[in-house]
Length: 389
Ligand SMILES: [Fe+2]
Image (cartoon, rainbow, N blue to C red; front, side):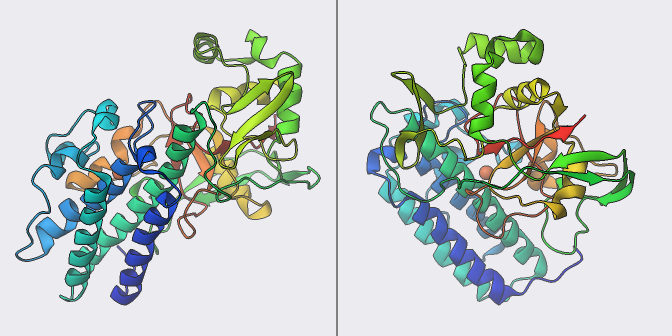
């Protein structure tokens, strides 16, 4: 790494980050911590424990002298997908675990916080600090997933419970303009002079043809016109896989939209509300984003077009689907050992999303960030920005 980590700043950041996860869960009732209504959604209890497991197994077990693990079963219960870290429970079975209790998981968090504090007092090396830094960013990623998953857990209840005002998507009433970017060679990717994931490196050059990109995300009002024009019934607009997906799952609108007595409503974390036409459309799959762009006779940006143009528009409300497949950059090297499983092994059948969302923890966003999901993902905070063909 080409930068030096200040241990005092990192220690503050560690405690600050750990508290945010608990703040996100504060409005929940104890029952809300447990269910897993679909495989992609993990129970809040699991997120709280898994982000803690990461610090225990990647850092304390290896680097804190005389450290004793909190509970012998937790390595098995809260490993997500790291083959290097041993056996684990089935991903789809996370919602069946009523034990350990939520209270025990909070005890686990306090235990790990205490021991990371002890580790900070032992004058840790830059290598250890680097691991703690990864653990902080890892927990921040889970904080965003916590928001998605809490919304799905509450938003699929028949009573549409209210979570609170946090993480609402603001209106955007600005006038749409298209920004012209001249063709040329551009530098993309992360320089490595501050924290980034391995998938953002190495920095390299790309050639882009001239393009015009919107300064504004597509709104719900725009998207409603697509629905009213029969967009979900017109096979010409959809990929074959997408057409099968929307028909098999009977999808006729973005996730959380409900038509009641001929009026469009939407589940928000503030409960069921009338659809606000001036809010950027969100909870769309890549399939839907692509079909909408087809209907407008436009397209989605590539991840590189987005990164190059991003200095000229506002971003940060929603993750923005790109048409770029999630692939390694030229010269990509995955980390040694378990951390090498963090990104590289997912570089298949996923699309890159750029930007960040209102659910992204402050400080976690950067223009080189490469978020990625399968084209069918809809419970994420995703939106659409168009490019003229
Ligand atoms: Fe994780």
